[in-house]
Image (cartoon, rainbow, N blue to C red):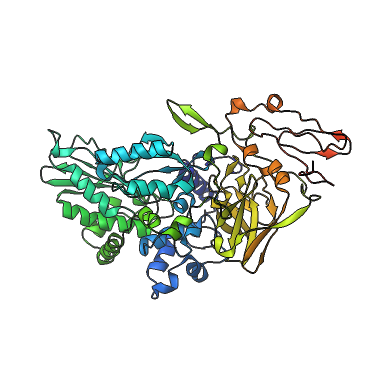
Length: 604
């Protein structure tokens, strides 16, 4: 990635890049390791096999236990979500309870998809695409109340964009009153079961595809898998629901349904293959239970059903992977159907609406508070400008890397070395969940406090990721690289040392601050609020439309007395708040400031 930049955009080409690299290495006499990461010398299927067959399930029911038994180190942004998915697929407890929040990737941690600028989307489940007038009204009321951008998705549901994290429990409380459940758009799980109207309305329909789609979606909702799963039910061979382009799809016939498996869109679209024909609904469910669980237990990390299926062995008669699947799922050639049935039924029986669990529990709701040390909230449009698009608001476009408002550069030296500092109490130990980051507010500056209980260490850094100036680092996953503690930004997985602030494998850097515990109190050593705000203040780092940034034009020159302490350049949005003093000479700068040496900013 570093050399070619391949896979550093949307990430859609990563599987192809990995395949090309693997083939090239093999042609040169080498090989590409299938280990999940540096912490586990195993692939996901190998680790899953060890966990699910362990004679003592209680010895592998947490990440820490699995790491101690089969890996080493602290873990990272790769293995933690992978193990979290395994635990959810085998045990199925609430994903943010009992330390599991520390394992969740960007979206699962907040149970919402993180968007540009650090806001989130809300996607309720709409089984089969069937929605009531009251539910439509509730969506509109929520969009108006919280000023959310609304869009119909390609999977027959409504997406509400632009929510702040602290607003999510309130939004879901409103939506839950009309029967909405989590749509799991944030998880590697079943997304939707799309349907046409089938025989209930369409003159060509031969089966009630809507009712069957609702049944299938309600059975598999919330089930975590190696990657997302999509499904569809078409009411006749006209195939309006496009079932043959899904991970599993059903097409109605006069005698029941044809069941197709292993299709997907994406970079390399794959047509699903026929597993069984003219079967009734109960038989479809039985075969799907086994197909999905077989996939969950044996697929690689972030592997869709199509590439997983293509790698399966051929059947006994040389009929390819689909023949192998028929032998395993229908004929029970491996003798594992009882296990597959049992494990799937456990997941169905233990289903819980994740957002309902949060809404009804004050302790879980508290996990969505914006700052640990204050009830004050910073509005989403104070962090990134929102612009009008056909009557709705969306975040301003990110400038390309290398342009202003990207790749923010921390000062080369210790900019606060000569500043007068003090220890600021930012909360109690209990306010900071173990092994995750928690944001705090100091003046207008957002900081991130990390309680790395696994190592017995605490860290404090800026909350703003310098890559795109988004205030999200506290939501990143803690881990280590070659023993050095790090945090991975939740947006693009930029990794920063918790000790030095330097980026691993890059040129960016974040500011770090001393932190200490005194009894139950957590304190951070910080300079004066105004000095810190001049460098890291939220308003000064707000991302604007690129055509609005004109520091020279916006700067307001403020004269000072003979003992002057520099020039305060206060742009209209506090872009370039700067204080710099060098004897009697005055300098101005657009992005960084050197604090006053002898006298505090307050006095100036």
